[in-house]
Amino acid sequence: MTTNESLQWFVKTFSKDLKAAVAKTPFSVDMLAAIAQQETGYMWGSFVARRLSVKKILALCVGDTFDFPGRTAFPKTKSELLAAPRGDEMFAIARQALEEMAQYVPSYSKAVSNPDKFCHGFGIFQYDLQYFKEDPADPAFFLRKKWVNFAACAAKCVQELRAATKGLGWANKTRLSDKEKIYVAIAYNTGSHRVDTEGGFKQGHESDGRYYGENIAEYLALAQSISPRAAGSIRKTTAVARLKPPVSAMPEKPHSLLKFGDEGDEVKVLQALLQSQGYFAAAVGGHFQDKTKQAVVYFQQTHLGRDGKPLEVDGEVGDETWWALYHPSGLPQRSHIPAVVPAGLMPMRAKVLKVAAAEHQADVHEDPDGSNWGDGVSKYLEEAGSPGDCWCCFFWSWCVHRALGKHPFGKPMGSVLATWQQAKIKGWAMDKGGYAPIPGDAFVMLYKDDSGKLKGTGHIGFVLRVDKAKNATVFNTVEGNCGNRVKVGRRQMDQSTLVGFINHYQREKKPRRWETGLVRADDVGAEGTR
Image (cartoon, rainbow, N blue to C red):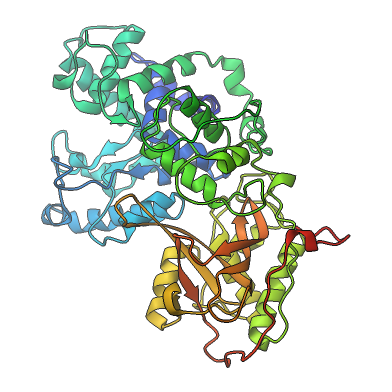
């Protein structure tokens, strides 16, 4: 969803409670909409596109996993929370909230891997966990999960806005100008004592070269531009229409190589393209920082270049990534490589690959494009996933279950990192360094941050064919959620994100000799497989 559509959905969905919350206050519906967009819009904008229920969206609006030394307010650490009255209950709730969020927002998976991490922000306006203990303390808001109730969240937001207004010396004001609303919002973010009401909007938390105040100013203007008629007309059309194939409306033109740290008009074009396709939820500011790089990486993970090969996942925007941004779906993203199962495999491997190949042959793809859903995709998520979940791992698990009658780990798996960790425990995980992949194995890709630490996100699929039995350098794959479809492609052994392979066929002998050699895009016949 675009930011404008996201705000329209918010105002329409919560109109009654919003009006009740701001009644007899100097605040306004558009002010609360702007704050919500800034605090959690990057979450619920994607959840709406995935067609999650309003109750589920509200439950998932949690975040902020920073602890000491990055956090100075209570609770700075797990131990500090546990030491508080009923702190053990609160930690269990905050930890569960983090684990549930990570199923929908992959960037939280890294935090989940640390057992001491938990959420500190709750609700669509991000009410801080410090108020579990500190004045004005309200532990029941957290223990009873009141953040799932929008009216309760709005009441807390207004309570904090009143305190911010008082701190700025405006407690007696019955109306606020737009400029004053923005300064109150900055105080809501940082504390009144840190706000200079004559210092402009470059105040508050800074991210990707944009300040909290600058974003609030933009979102406030957008919210004010939403007419009652427009807000009332989006019950279905906005969310669904936005999910149609995201072919760029911008004319294609040559661009420079862009990477972290760049800024300017070309970065704005990049951010606008990513935003229009649902990869970038922040404001378009022209600064290539962390959120922009993360959006580029996520885009590269599931798209092909003009040569029909997967994009290099490096977070930089060169010619091939620019091309894919202008051709993100439809015919340009079909691999046109046939799913030819190699001869000479043992029965279990052959069965699994035939199931996966049949899904490719059936051209299973998301409908609407970008929704992580559709008639063909939904069956992968029926046992354990939810509409809108990333589905590459569910596809892998489903194919094995369909072919062999059981899931590799006894239950459907949706997390690539958790799957790799379970495979390690069972002795099925083979690091790529000294292992020759066999058709039917799962290939596993895990993504790291700039410091080299695992982010908790990844990608998984089947090895279909290898170029040679020993010392393979290239292999064909069948993988789900690649370019929003089941796709046959090629991957390189030296791809930096490839960590290894999973061989779960322990009850079956290793095939001694099987057909090698890759299939090519020009091998496609009249059947036109994708």
